[in-house]
Image (cartoon, rainbow, N blue to C red; front, side, top):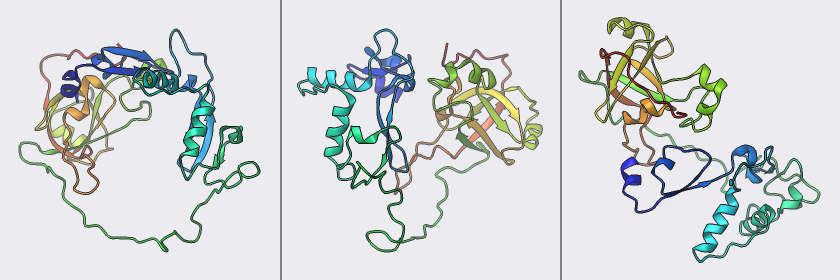
Length: 281
């Protein structure tokens, strides 16, 4: 991804902070944060709701829809809307699921779609309560496949990546929260006590973790959360980015990258404390 972004002739990024992606941008447009947005969203239970701003936008920041509309207009596709309600009503009229809804009817608590009569009804809370349009659900067994990459003598550990409670994705907002960053300030590797003993590692020792694709350096956290032979690294820390190690191989049907399983080796870091620069610095 870094190589692809670096090769672009021109890149515009719309965001609220100087993110890793924005560092490649020729132009950065100041967007609105979640607490400053005005618009609509749909929950996974199909409830369509209005989101209202809790804070005024700072400086030259603008609503996302305003930025998109002005870009479209300047590029020759006029997008003249006076409000978010105009945007929503056009969108709803263009779909089958939302076509009976309009912004005014959403009110304080929103509506479920489909909603044949939004003036008097909250909508259809459960869509398929007895059957599906095609009849009963069809369950198809799927055989388990081996991972693309298994542990070996050279790479004996299984790496699993994921999240921690305090942070979200690449930490664009959560690592700028003083409280959340104080609780979970830096990258770490969780390892079973048995594996730590075998490698002569103690809590807070630095290690290098290597795969066939890359190397990162981070601290050890000794815990019985992972099983022996397995390690866990959270994905939120750019200074020890877990996806430098992970396997981009995709499964044959869903085309989902195999970021949750790859083979790695672990070695004690013996060159002093490494310099790490956090995402918020």
